[in-house]
Image 1 (cartoon, rainbow, N blue to C red):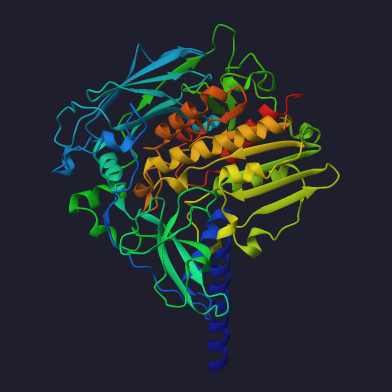
Image 2 (image 1 turned 30 degrees about the horizontal axis):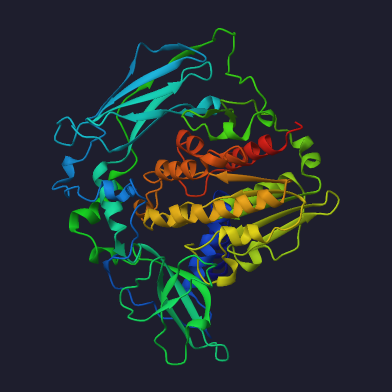
Length: 570
């Protein structure tokens, strides 16, 4: 009897083990490569190397007094909200349950027709909003067709918004409008940019050259102000001429030149932000009041258009249109159909079978963050190549990577964009300015460079992004002047509006998206005939992206749009 009980327990134990293993496999299958990287970093933080210990840097909050003035005749985006009076009650915010949205001019359209939508905001008390400034997005979608497209939204400054869409396919798409960020949330987040340190703060790790157990971590900032530290290390020269200041280590045996690694501290997740924000401001920075869809059920019926088209087809091939056309930013810039993106200005001609001939004798260099790293992984699957550096699974995700295809004389490279960059224990020499990277390209070989910077700079005041663009432009002009075989693509901001991460609002990914896209447009408008712009906002708004790392078909669309532009022989 006793033996039988043991056998039963053993069988039960095996069954539970199988269920547990199956559960783990299902979770791993659901997680993206980026998720697995993040888990690895969190585990390293929980169980660090025993021979190296660092205490958290001293965190002191203080008003940022060294932010430079805005260019003459302009205001920084944050200045437009700086005098907003703090909201007294959460019910004063625009409320998606009380707000209204409707289609103007009936609900039937032909392919190619314009669709006008009106949005009226009401607050939680039921009163009509009388001022503008809320971030409103609108889009149409038909999931059964893998179809979606975003709208151009116009703020009428009186609590009403006009959304302009285009009917791109035959079907019955749903039209959706959402309050992505109430004005009061935007104002709270933008005012926070005038407080030091940033919510997601870079730090410097100093290591004694002969005694690696002597380590100290101190806060860093783009301006020469680090509260809590009377003495600073000025790393502007080490940062390739771009400002970077860190607290001087207090350990008697550590000097500024012992800076070895870049790290970060998430002050929101550490629970420290309550020191810097009022009670209601802290509440506004939670997920509770962002990315809320307006309560409606709008259906559009779309029938074939004048050309008897079931799906809109642009006239020109993307490889044959000018680079300047890529800078025509009016939404909607295109649409998804069967999860494939079509630019409204030009016809997709991407063909995987012809990709190898396009990339023969080519260097493709991606400089950016995890989004360009996702693009690296996607392109690696499209063009078989062998890693000649350590893979990210062995060396960590924030490491430069190169893979090559000797038969094609093709190389694919990924590099980290300049500071600020949210990372953990990354060697500082991995992070260079854009101009430093581009100045290293001295040969005349066929070279395609994709440049991107967005998410990692969002916690900083907008002047940081503004000044980084000037450095980027300087490097681009120098490269294009000396190498007639080079092509440069600038990837614009993307949205991840529907994030489920508790620290999502501190990033404000959508509130800065249009602003930073305008920064890019204005900085490069005098050379937009020499540079390609990769518009990413419409793709990610219409597809309701929720994760900072976009879904695979979005990344495929990014890569496809690049090849549509640079592979002119398609």
